[in-house]
Length: 276
Image (cartoon, rainbow, N blue to C red; front, side):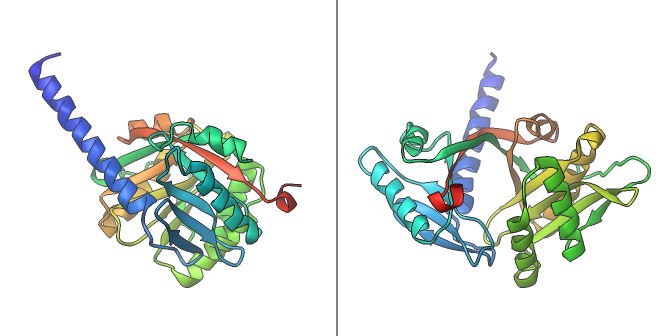
């Protein structure tokens, strides 16, 4: 490897480290809520708690070591159990201790999936929307649009998304500036959907929920929805886009200049009454 290549690699690694630190500071440790969650910070965790059966509950960040990890895990279980809520704990591959996932498993959590943290500079993401004839991207920032988005989600994932429906409606009522929803319509039917969220006081906009009916995959709809949401992020002055991406989404995102910043494992915990 030549000197120029080594120098470029060193600069790239420093930049990636800077972006990762900024992400941890602004996103994982950020205190901005969306009107449907209560954000609580402690020396050891940042905890998001659902409010009135909308929003979601999770541990977004943790700072643990071998001396306190079990006690902190037990404290979070006690907190959410007393509220009758289930919650998730997102474990990033840089989180300590290294056996955090195993300790969560011993405490009754279930691994629900492993994804990748993908980040791109907004300016690098192509924003041209190219769709097949008769197919269109439609803003979904009202009750009809939310129903269309949920319809796609429930068909794709084959699970109930009624809480997400309630959450999106609550967000639209209290904080309509917070997010942009979009669906792809074909012959009057929603066939793909996604959303982008713009929490304040951070450089990162977040992409969520990109889903497409099986028969419509491979037709550029996912790419078009990323481009559409990148346009929105550009218009609002955000610097970065991030995605907690599935293995299926990662190759497409890499072609759109997203970079992988490591794995994210999601562990879920439910009170006994909710898990029966």
